[in-house]
Image (cartoon, rainbow, N blue to C red; front, top):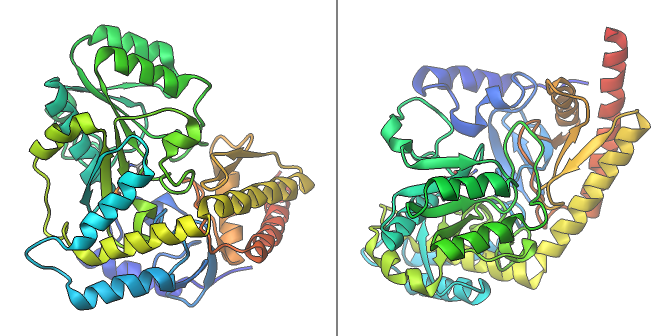
Length: 413
Ligand code: PMP
């Protein structure tokens, strides 16, 4: 079974003449499946989207996370449009910024203030500055292999980065409290902050949940040493717990960064913090050309209110669990062991015994060819628009894909 991607390929060729790399960053075809995956999309609605060749997909990437209520949710779009008609870009913030800050501060238990940006990197980079301002220390600890954005201190790329950019950034492995303690000893009195995601979700390997006591252990040590704990909840925020993912895993940070699901696709990010960081937060310069724009804030308020009212977190958990269970059972019918990594709302199923990802790539390509978009190397996302029928259709598609992968593997023996 094949799908036509000729328009995607033709556009990519055109793009390559005028855009370095054609498509850059995480959506580069090199990170998915060159020639077996769409490169350009033209339309999206609810749980589905359509590529430039007219192929339809059940969407399990949700724009890499932002789409939490489904594409084009009318409640969010109407709120954004109403605000856009009033004011798009003006000389002052709008009242909606305060309303949104109040809403967020009410929901996030430890926070007493909020600020806004556009992208996740804006907030993680600002947050480490706040930690440095608060403590008057230089060093930041992060988890090896964790992604926090594209700023020079954290980019996974090497080009254009000088050693001074990361001179005070030090890593330790996820779930390794001993290594963390060793870092604390090595840099006693010099560490401003620790930045962590609520669970470990590196590309090209299964997600890893926090081990018992890991996050609490980090928290306790940080409290003793006066180190600021920054929770990078950009990917997981509002999918695991409506009050921040620390509530899902049972610990408490000092600062939390949100983006992705905060406004159902409208450009907005936020950082919230504890009362005692308020002065440092007010000193670290924070602005951008579009950062006061009210429509994304109106979209965010509508998105979060709807998500809360519909108990979106629970819906995504149920649908995600059904998807993981369905894939595990379908895989087993064809002799495959599926590793269900990550929480159900942000699942990342992979194959056991597939060190070079070949099986995963083949499987995702076969699923994509049948109308559900699975990314081979990045965790997936559920939205509240995914219906039981979507999951059932996806599992049926996946079962066909498992059968095809098995056939190919048998024929190659
Ligand atoms: N932190 C995490 C955990 C992320 O997943 C991302 C985005 N994938 C970022 C930070 C950076 O966010 P942005 O791409 O919006 O700058």
